[in-house]
Structures are given as C-alpha cells and as structure tokens.
Image (cartoon, rainbow, N blue to C red; front, top):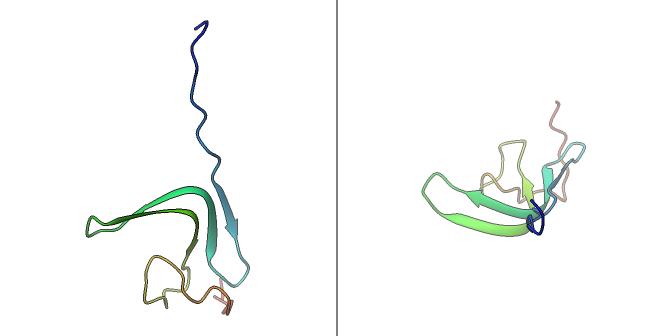
Length: 68
C-alpha cells in the first residue's frame, strides 16, 4: 500500500475513578435511546445510578462510594 495514507483514530482513554464515575477522554460520541446524540471531548459516566442526567454523571465531584 505504497503512498496510501491511513487515518489515525484519536485515542480514547477510560479511567475508573475510585468511588466515582468512569472518565472517558478523547472524541466521545454518546447516543441516547431516544436517538439524540452528544459529542464531547470528555465525559463522566455514572456508575451509581443516581444521576438525573443518565448516563452522564452530575455528581462526580462528590465521589460517593459505590460499594463495588
């Protein structure tokens, strides 16, 4: 494949925050069940189920222990 340029996809990093949400960094596309979509450079995904904005975490600074 001489002379062919292969596009490099941006790296996505998932970090598990102790007693908190999953932090996803990189080009993140979140598709909701109702068909809506958001594109972010960073997203915090709720693991406790208490967020009123599921699947996004709105309580990430509180770091409530999940017991997992």
